[in-house]
Image (tube, rainbow, N blue to C red):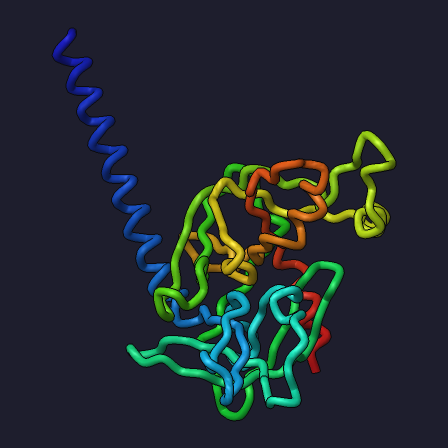
Amino acid sequence: MRLHIIRIFAVLILWLQFGQTQADEVLSATIARVKPSIVVVGSFQKTRTPRGLFLGTGFAVGDGTLIATNAHVISKEKDLSHKEALAIFVRRDGKEEMAFATELKVDPVHDIAVLKLAGTARLTPMILGDAGQVKEGQDIAFTGFPIGMVLGLYPVTHQGIISAISPTVIPQLSGKLLSSDMLKRLREPYDVFQLDATAYPGNSGSPLYDPQTGSVIGIINKVFVQEGKESAITKPSGITYAMPVTYLKKLLDNVD
């Protein structure tokens, strides 16, 4: 009997290891497909050192000439007098490339922006999934540039689960804790994805996707959502949030 139980446990362990190996292989294949779509969103100024400035992460959508990111990533006013321009940086076929971009559409409420690549620049677009089908406990991954271009144009991937689907603003116990921005959000609340994976400021604009299919279900948002959900916390928890891809789809529907 004891030997029989040991055999069962041995088979179970082998089965779990095999399942994990398969999951790892699937994620590895997905990352390989996703990486060509991930870009650094920044600015370029010929007379500046360095000429390229990192602002955040973005990813190709639509026909490959469009880049999705957070609105706050491109909110910094450009130095037009010195010809500072919006640009994206990407590594393709082992080479670092840059393309200029223009601001096409911005949704300040949900902190989403769509950029248009200049000229003939075109990247591999990511497939947009259905955020309405996302469940708590679901596996996720996101790829971006957590510390900018410090280590070069090499996208970094994190994985985890959807730990909660909750409102962007949590009502406070006292009216004294409510800011004008929080009041605006309370009037039109919407749900965001809370993740158990850690993102960093440079990850803003990174695609949140299904590890198996690579379809985008959200956009990592490290700053905008956190200000609403954690404003009453003296020491922010550092929890990572993502905006459902639903709002990006709506923005793309209005792109001419």
